Image (cartoon, rainbow, N blue to C red; front, side, top):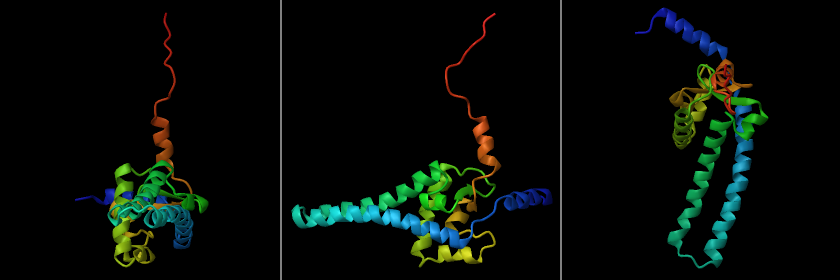
Length: 175
């Protein structure tokens, strides 16, 4: 059972990060949606051309919608893991962090993306949840223990960078 001191420390950590507003998050989603829509439409053009002029049997055309779905998931995973923000989030100066303000792990990003599919499949209720949550977290944020914050991540990212070993040749002093 956590002590009062542990809960106080957790509350201080939660206050250390500023949750992003819903309007900014919606704007970022619109930008990301436009980017993804252009890629998926380009892929759809190939789908249409393959079906009309190539003479491929319909059984092989399942590849194109599946590839479009993988592109959407890979887009989010690559950008959220690498930069902690998608291009839309970067435009609005938002970033993804764990609940303490540190860089999220790859497992957290993967869980967040997979649960976002459930959030959307439940008639969008997982996204609507953010309206009523005190830290503006959606179902996928809660499941992955992440939060979308304003600005760049706090102390955690810089502390991890400082602990990273320096690259380059090692030099030794002899005598």
